[in-house]
Image (cartoon, rainbow, N blue to C red; front, side, top):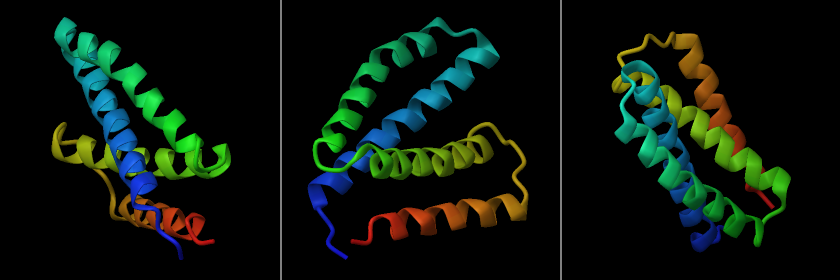
Length: 108
């Protein structure tokens, strides 16, 4: 498996930005905080810009699968840790399998 450190760095930054936007959006939805919404509006173009940078090195199918799977796993963790939402053991198993899928997608 060939690992491109630059691509993986941008994948993690991109996913992190999308997870942050998800958390801020949830906060805005629960509290009506204009500050949270403002941060989402500022961070969203940066997130999509990072996604575009990844697409210069990988095709859309792989890029989308990598970023979106990490975003799903991160959003579950944010929901469970920050918002104290309940996540079942079976759901955690599903997230683990998704992360294994990310690894398989990166095999070449």
